[in-house]
Length: 299
Image (cartoon, rainbow, N blue to C red; front, side, top):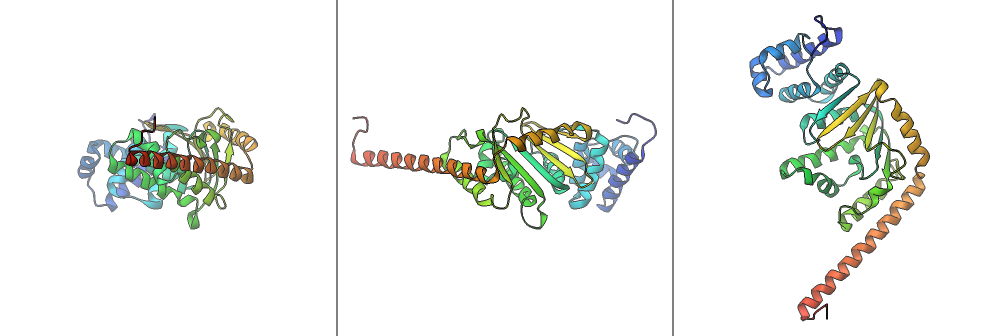
């Protein structure tokens, strides 16, 4: 809801963008309203700048109109600026609008810094790891696979022509086998070791800073945005509210291992998981042999 009866230039600009996108997609107000579950009169007020839609509303409209790429990023950035210095995006990244907002910030960033104290960062997760950490909160297998695919697509900012400057800090607690699957952890760590030559990965004590997991985006317009992922919502801070996290990142950099020492630590952890996997396989083989020969392992 707007605070004034007169639309600001930014509000009028967002309204024009939404109206132009609707016309280009050959949608009427009533038809679009049915798609997104919004009254045509409210859609019209958004287009006129009389009322300001939420970020979720804008993402829903753009999704219904099929707006993608740079145009979608531009409109979402305009909507984000109007939303203020902080906002909450409901739902997990299984929510299309939530995912689009995260991916849009990554694509529009000139640099990205990630702190993941307890889990492997989303941008570095293997498909099996992503399924295991996200699966318990998402039982629909089709949606889960879409979330995993989206997570893999986001890796474009790490490699190739679309790569941006990144530094990823992983907490030492993330190397523990809290998932209960040594083989999965071994594959995950081997992947990190494989890409460590091209991706800036550093390990830091999980208690190095009090902040939970977050991603810090320096946008191309030099705006800072910090994103906090949660199971049922995502929290975004920008401008002055994001500024203190520059100091948090500096403390992480001071407490983290060097790139070389981090790689050595990852290799040592992978070796431990490899031994655990071998021991488990030997135990399984011994149990199978006992079963086939009729021997009682307890005897």
